[in-house]
Length: 412
Image (cartoon, rainbow, N blue to C red; front, side, top):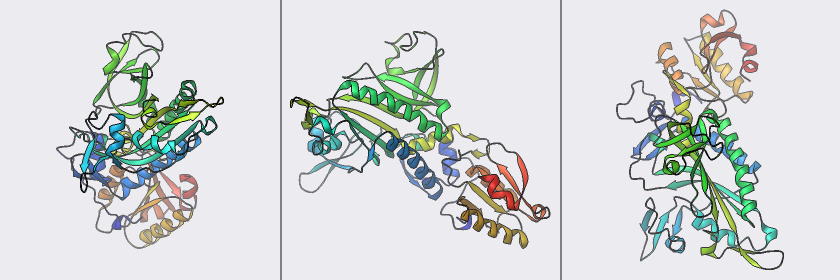
């Protein structure tokens, strides 16, 4: 990608009205653009990061046995009446169509996946089964804030599992906890993310949230000083000691929820008569589980914990590009940079090439730090005198000269 053609512009001045570090850096870095409160466009840089996060999540869901589908955002009122959530869900967008038709804009998809599964599941031989999607969700948040950490329109991965018994669902539930932490490790936020106990509702004592500690978070969690299990604020009063290790020593932290998992039991299978025949031919309700992970929120969360005073520091796995190539000066430096741009791409190394002639070296370096691509490569007459380029790793800040022929190897 040529930076001179990039469909975005950076801004060196910090915004006065932003509520989080990620909101500030993603806006100034040209990753997102706010259309209105809680609604954002993802520009080329931000969209590339979003797709990289998607791919990490998709890979892990498939390895966990999930099959990817795509369900409608527009959902019939009738399904929401069946589950009793048409009137009770306060964040539900309800819209009127032609005639007397009313619809919901999906904040979640239990009302769609349950009747869908009814067309596939008939026997115990069809179970267990899990399906997932990466889809846009809509929630009528009373107060959208902190940039893409709390929005009214967002991208989310939701997976639903179907089982013959509660024991089988519990086994899968525990498996997904490990899978989620593997995802957070790949995203570079595992060390800040805690498995957090929350109210389990009808079918279990606890469900679980995955809370990432950040000052921009709206949630309060209490982290056990002994085993690092966390408890959310809503259940802390009835849980004076850690259910995992019985310690009564906790540290209070602000956090943002990046994922959650629930035991659904038969809450959504019974309203749609979702049943299976067991080995004896008896009909039984299907047991369900739900596993959510915010894709667009995860992008903001990553920035909250991967930044410094100069800008974003992207983990390589999700960075929009691996290399930010910068040419300083005209003549041989420009020609060498253009040749390197082609060669690195042939090596399957993704490159953003700052080919602009109207920016000073200082301006280019400042923008590179703000955007936060893992490697900065500078080509100048000075480096070419030693048949080298300047290589700087964004996360370390150290600069070294690398021979041009060794550059691809050094980056890989």
